[in-house]
Image (cartoon, rainbow, N blue to C red; front, side, top):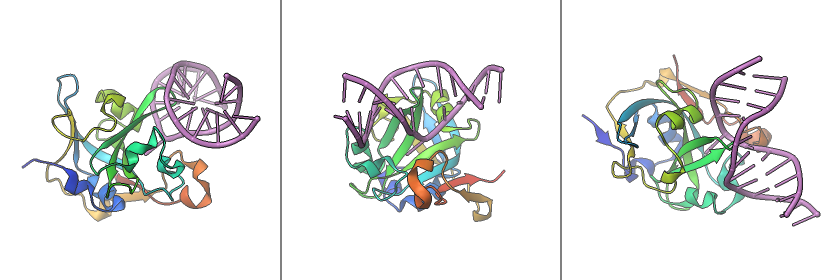
Length: 173
DNA sequence: ACGATGATGAAC
DNA sequence: TTCATCATCGTA
């Protein structure tokens, strides 16, 4: 059985959502071709007080998306080349999100979006079949013992506390 | 180890 | 308006 994940799923606590997104599927039908990929690596960004989070800059043209409703996509460009895919979590205004870093076949957040044809066009849109990008539960259980936690990647700017938080979750190989 | 490549936010 | 930086990746 396949269930599309909606707002309710993304309303929970960000760290819980991050962990439970492992083993779920990211499905893209952008450009007509359907690609379904099992999520294997994610990172949590837990609010305005989280110095690694873009939302710690407060509400700006870019970051206001993070202050929106659970289940909307926050997609931005880094290094002038790579789109980063995030899903907004918790209640409106919490400014929390989960970054999708890797799937089964595509290692790295920039590779993943490139291969699934994800761009800023979907920024601030809801993850849904209608918008050609959604999340599915295909009932593949990931055991706790198979999940590894590490600090987040590329956030040394966040200072001694926040750069060291173990908010990266990945499926052990 | 480094360059590609352009948006972002802070300083001026 | 300028400037350093950036939730990265492929090539060396």
